[in-house]
Image 1 (cartoon, rainbow, N blue to C red):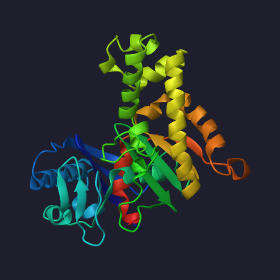
Image 2 (cartoon, rainbow, N blue to C red; image 1 turned 180 degrees about the vertical axis):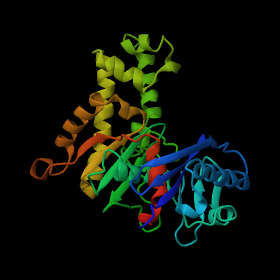
Image 3 (spheres, rainbow, N blue to C red; image 1 turned 135 degrees about the vertical axis):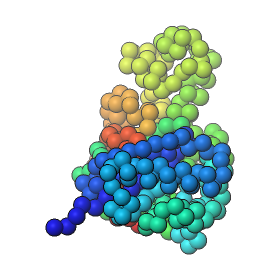
Length: 321
């Protein structure tokens, strides 16, 4: 009788790193996490990456010999020609021989991919898009992350640097983005952008429920307050939401036209707005997407795995690399 296969996944963020053991049914059977402490040396951080991963294996009641491979999701990319980790902003790393550091601690076959790609892969394997083979995901948080899955495999271009959906251009010479460019989707559709727009609006007009819900302190505005005000019928909040949805639809319609996925997944804090976001967004896409009436468009749905998506996707990278 064939034994169960287990996979080790690690999701490394700027705040925490979370490791999990995943079985062949795409279920997490044990998890461990520790603070990342991003300002440390690469030796210290990679040592912790290995240690927290080993602890997850022990917590699952397994040994390292029981694990098929180790997959890691990070806010960066590995150059397939050099095996160097190209650029990890939150760590200050550039062209780092990451595998050399990791194999000092764990000798398993090791795979590394961008964290947003891992999260998308996890949602397609085990989450809200598990019945689909072709999907695009946007995570609408502090920034806008993105991932593309085609044929149940991660698509990231010839050099692993593709699928940076948040940095596609929405407005020529528009708002400055965190990447240094102007007019990126992220500069208009992230929660950071939404807060900026809310503050700009409040500086001109405080006659709105938004002002009351934030305790008359513009530094406390957030997406949750905006959508709650819109839900209660505040006209200014509804206008900001409508404008936001129009911008988001413009970006998504471009991805649909290029890739024709079966489904679009939304994750991140803004997606918690639920139908107040999804219903008008799906309606808007029908009016602004090429050939929508003739051939239809994919539905936009919410991600359902939360942070577990990145662990599951990372753990099962060996199936897509």
